[in-house]
Length: 100
Image 1 (cartoon, rainbow, N blue to C red):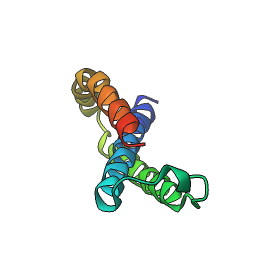
Image 2: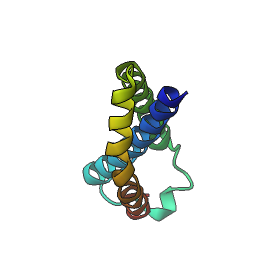
Image 3: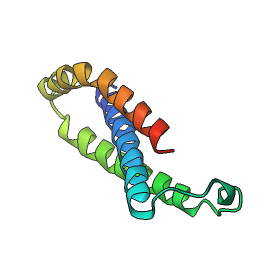
């Protein structure tokens, strides 16, 4: 159970980071969007970013689940992720606010 739970944590972190990275990339490539066109937009970019983030998160979960086959690796991952979770959540939240 710990192995699956940690794989899901890795999935959530990887998907969040991938989504924010895709938003930043879209903003850099296309520039600022016109607020009047947001209502008329097909939102294709959102669906593409969400699908890409889900795919990357799923791939990261599979890799994490497969690589956590020994309890020593699980404990090492918990020790590595624990101090990084709160700053990473803050960074993702700020980036999501700045680059909607």
